[in-house]
Length: 319
Image (tube, rainbow, N blue to C red; front, side, top):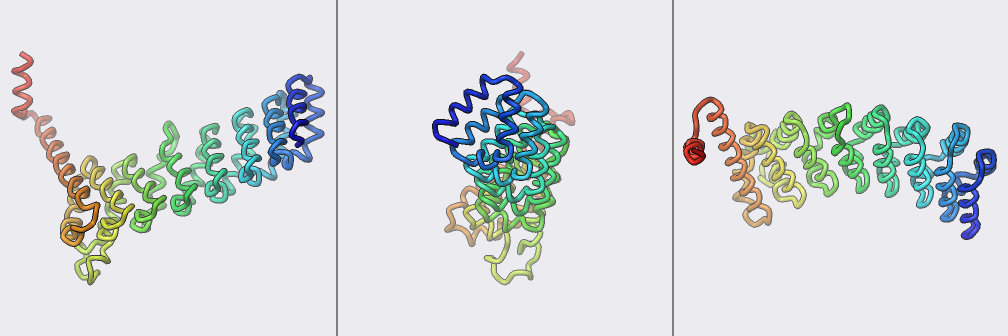
C-alpha cells in the first residue's frame, strides 16, 4: 500500500517463479480486501491477478475475496480488482462473483461503480451466468428502471444479442401496471421507449394497451377533466410525450390496430394541448404513421397480384 513499494511488488510478481508467487499470494490473502481498497494497493493486487497461473493461486485469491465482493464493487479502488478478476480469470473461477452479484442485484446495479461492474459481469459471463443475472435483473426491473444507475443496467441487457431468453418480452410484464408513471420519469421513460423499439409485437401491444385502457375516450365517465386522462398526462409531460411518439411510430409499423386506437384516444385531447411545445411532433408522428400503414396496405395489394402504376412504370423504364 506504499506509494513506491507497490511498484516493487508489481515487479516481483512479474519476475518471480511459481513457488515464490504462491508464497506471495498466501501471505497477502488475509489482507487482500483491505489492500484492494487502497489507492496504491489496488494496482499491486491487479498485477497479482494478471500473473495468476495455477489452480491453487486462483483458489486462494477467490477464497480471500468471496466474502467481500459487494463491498469491493462499491469501492472506488476495489471495483477495479473485481473487474480484473472478470477479465483475467475463467468464468467458472469467477462464479463467486456472479453468485454475490445475483444475490445483491439491486444493491450492485443502483451503485455508481456497481452498475459498471454488473455490465462487465454480463460481458464476461457464460450463457448460464448471463441467464442467472438477467433473471435477477428482470425480477427487480421495476426498481432498477427508476434508478439513475440501475436503468442503464436494464437497457444494457435489453441490447444483448445471442442470449437464450427473450429479454424484452420477459421484462415488459414486470412493468405492466406502471407504464404511465414510468413514462413520466426521466430514467424509466428511456427504458419504456427502448422496449417499444426493440420488443416483439406482443410487447408493443401490451404497452399501448395499458396507455390506452384508462383513457377518457374509452372511459367517458371516469374523468371529469381532460387533465386527469393518462394520455393527456403523457402528452403534456416532457418525458411522457416521447413515449407517446415512440408508441405511435412502432405501433404504425407493427400493430396498426393499436395505432388507430392510440390516435382515437389522442385526437380529442389535441385542442387542449395547443400551447404545449410537443404537440406538433405528435401530429407529425400521427401523419407519418398513417402513411406507413397506407404504404403497407399498398404493398399487400401488390403481393396479391395487383401492380401499382409506379411498379408498372418502373417496368417500362427498365425495358
